[in-house]
Length: 360
Image (tube, rainbow, N blue to C red):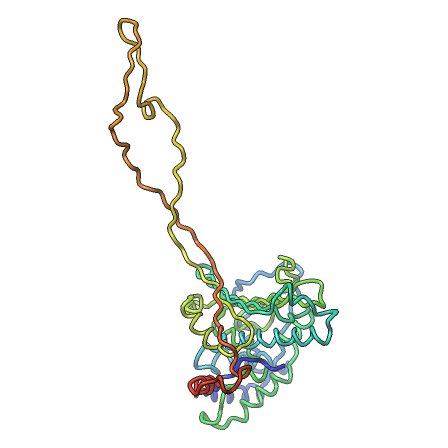
């Protein structure tokens, strides 16, 4: 099945065309190991102090040359608008959900559990930690699929993508439709210093993590120390760059996610956070003779009991009520409209057709 998410046509900048020329030169003047300048730059980046600390026993892999060259172009020059990373992640998540639904019909013994784990996409941000997480309950990836799909194998989509860039003659004809080549995942490095992918496939007993840093020539894969937290599907966490913290803002995310999920059939939800002041009950104060006795009995000089009774008419002073700040979380579904191609044409207005055309 194909993704329900449309692709938006975007033009290359002059820098993209220059990057293609640089790529051709790097191929012509390769080093003794056959690596062009793009790989040398990546290796130099690995020498910089890393903030990623994988657990002991993590497997380290090198990106293949063609894949890494494509990443250099994507991150450095391809996109004039960084927002497209969210479009690609929503599109990939929708594809994963469609694939699970298909496999659940063709291989029901292996792919089951849609009733227990509904097909959906969830978007969550953490403004304090500067992270953005996109989670789907689709087919997920095994250990080998994570290694193969996310870096070591120059997939046909990557090859076609590079070839398409080389064949672009000028700014007018060079169009960016990265999603159609299956390499949209790498657009995450437009906004992230580090990307962490956790995934669980029904054919694999364990949940695995893939992790890499921006401009790195390698990545690591290891069993998730948290165990099986997903049940099924994929969770992509972006550790945002300092200049991309707008993508941890709920209003910004809502606007973008609604735009890119308008025609996705599966529900896409955004986790929102709100705070409020609530009243709390005062703890009972300890009883003391000085503060709690309104009527107290004292001994007179003559030995007789003398009873002092408090003034019944005195009013107790009302104390200010104590409050505390409480944080609550909720999930808001963003794409409540039914996909346009699933509706009867008589029920679709001209304005809806125009809006759909503009998204395409």
